[in-house]
Length: 111
Image 1: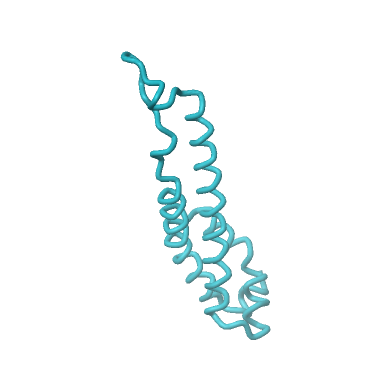
Image 2: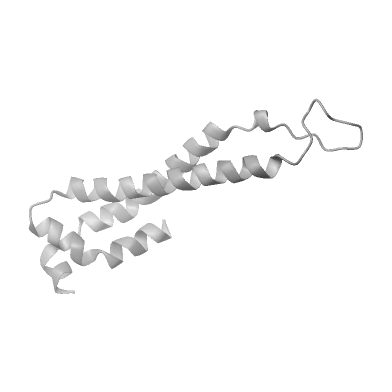
């Protein structure tokens, strides 16, 4: 959310130009929510991949011996984790997107 909020403040002149050229507020919201979804997707995919790679050195459930910690890569809910990450990123991007859509074009271009 903070990265998207900073992005909206840095891109105020661009948003003002889009709005001055006739872009509706819904388009500005769409742009920032899409950006948030892509950030969430990339973060979710990278997190799932790193989690998978971190579990590779551990023995599988079949090779479990007493006194060892069993780790089973197949029981990870990677799809659920990625979906929740994307959903959280979309929810976190709604507030910055709405504030970006309310930007007055004349004020934003003047900055």
